[in-house]
Length: 242
Image (cartoon, rainbow, N blue to C red; front, side, top):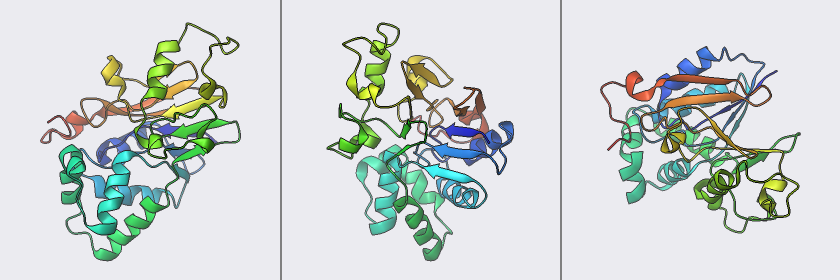
């Protein structure tokens, strides 16, 4: 059984389907998704439907991202967050055209059931963005940090290759977990189009919302799988490149 971690999808169903085929995913594989399933390309609602069906055949964990929080709020109340609308929400709302009230409620249940983080049996942490507490995720004061914080990744990049885990100045919040897997901050911001590793943090968001690809990584072997760039899979769209 493999354990595969998937980066931010952002409405790119074609990339997700292609990536599943490229990675030769079987029902024996455990799949962990680090959030942001919606907002960007035109098939957000279809991505959610695909993931719901996928959970029937595979052991899946769906971490909640900030874009998922916004979509969940809209499905629950009908209220459109202005920031969300300008950052992919418009396309997500449009993708729900033709979905019945009952189908939307099933999607709402799906969003509501997403955890903010997951810790596996080998003490590996999976979270959308990060956390700030030096005591670990269980003592994080602001839950919003799980899907908005970027300081964890910034710290890992800054400290990488400069100190080892036995150093007195090694960051305490990194000591709690053997590895940490995140999304949220596209690696293409750092001119990398594959998942990045800094100290014990792995960033799997390779910019699928923008000009990058959708990626997955085997957490045991560190083998990387990728789709084509999303702009090539959706040639008539602009995603979030606006």
